[in-house]
Each structure stands twice: as structure tokens, then as C-alpha cells.
Image (cartoon, rainbow, N blue to C red; front, side):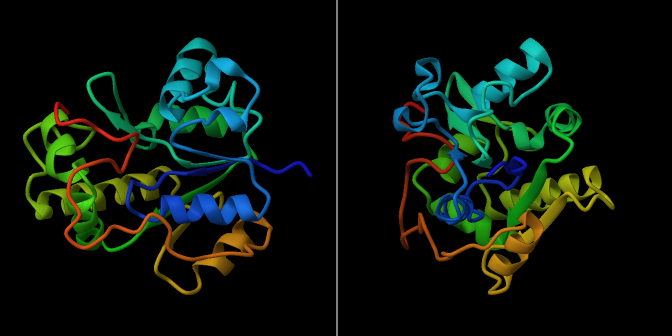
Length: 222
């Protein structure tokens, strides 16, 4: 069955892992921040970050999905593994626009939940919110900002506003709250499929500290 590619523009800790699992169980070939060797015979993509592939192909050919044609869904786009992989394609208008132009049938999602809850989860998810985001900086959140949960929440809200503005009036985008009981049905209707599973994957444990939310585990040097 041929499906239009699905691209999630949500930030880490907004249910991206839950979405990845749900789409896989619905039959989608899903890329979730990093390509595992078992997912493709293309050895040059093994263990590559999705964000790196998107940018390499965007600048090489204009089509960010040129080498990801074997995948039908991307659920986590960003990579936050300093110093070489601090990449946030979901914040980049040029890259998003290129996907829309090269893949006009693509369906987009914006996973989210209350900004304060997302900020709290980022802070508790290993060292994503406590070290990497404030130290290294990302689009909209320069280095030195983000130590406070309120600063993270402002950035999170601004990203959602950015995506809404980019897709204003475009039915190709569905925004959903991962905690909404109606989310699975809304996603299924948007994509034209049924989601046989919906739950809570990659849960942040209370009091957890230091690691990754966007990318692979990060060492103390990050």
C-alpha cells in the first residue's frame, strides 16, 4: 500500500515516541530521530541521524526526503548530540517548505502538550533541558537561555505558533495534544488509517536527570 509521507513537527517530549510506536503498529515504516541498521539495507544510512540526512539532502538536491523514500513517517526530526549534531529541522521554514513542494501529498502533524508540562519533562529527561538546550542553543532559544522552566515554556509555545503560522489554513497539518483521549481517532482520520495502539511510550520518570530527548545519550561533556 502506497501512503503519503507523514512528518511530525513536534518538539521532543511531546509524545514523539508514542506516535512512532502507534504508526509502526499501523503499518508505517517510521524513522524516529535515528536510522537503525535493521530498518534499511542502505548502509550509508545506518545509525545516521534523521536530521543530518534531511539537511544533507536538502542542500544537495533540494528534496530533504531524497534518501528517505523507504520510510512513510518521520516522528522525531531533531538531533541534540553536541558538538556536531545540534539540528532542529522542525524549526526551519526553508526545509519544511521544501518537503511541501517536493511532496505535495505529505501529511503533517504537530504533537504537543501544555508548554509547562513539556518544559518540566525536558528538564527531567536526562540532560536535555538542564544542560544541552541552555548550553548549546537551538533556533529560538539561544545559548544561555532555557535554564528556567518558564524560558523553555516560552520557546515551546513559540514553536507551536511558528508551525501554525506556516500552515495557516492548510488542511495538511493536524495539531494534537498527546494527552487527549481523542488524539488517536483524530490522527487516524487525518492520515486515513486506523491506529491499533495508543499509549505512553518513553515516559519520563519522576526525578530523572541527565540524558537525551532529541538524539542519542549525551556524555557529561555535552
